[in-house]
Length: 268
Ligand code: PMM
Image (cartoon, rainbow, N blue to C red; front, side, top):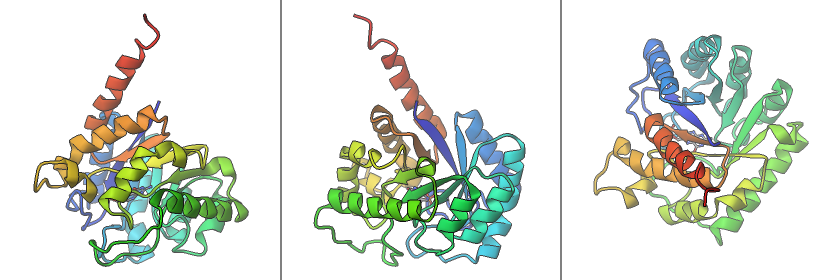
């Protein structure tokens, strides 16, 4: 059964929820609501990865995320921390984070692979090619499937060499990061190829810009939730470990549909 990771951005500038969850109390409230709606895990982030977003000092990032992680963990909520900073990852693990989710796959902070290895926690290694300042910048691939696959395979090797146990590694193809819509759709069409890279794969399509190619003209991020739920269903059909989404309710319903149908697969 595919798990649902609900997103809680404790940032004033997240592109997809407009920074609505900036304060500690609203972040907790929102996380608990996502849990009630069916989230298995909560991903807490304090730095927007939006192209052109301001980089956040790790101390400020920790000021945002640590109290939220600590409260959620104390409530028994499985939490991942979305950070590229080793110090934030280490501090988050101290207060109860079970998963380190690094969109740079350990490339931004040279200490991250060691800290992740020493923490003994799960580590999400996403495909990442660096910061893009122009959201419309096109990134060149000779063949997006084999290039992304090869780059991810090399990253996973490096992380294993740094001491992270292979069974702790969760691979993520990094939808929307240095990829145009066709790149993203091609990856979604071949999820199985990427899933074979590790025991577990996480997919984050939620509300991303490429979903506007299948949504009503001018659709704002929350209006991309139906497309997100459809992709969650495709992921579940491919046996993906987890999907990272803002709107848990829609994805829960999509996965319920699959469950209901699966229950009848063996009946004549
Ligand atoms: N996308 C965002 C942030 N963190 N983490 C993983 N593992 N995979 C993703 O695709 C991913 C991520 C970008 O979006 P947000 O600002 O909507 O949270």
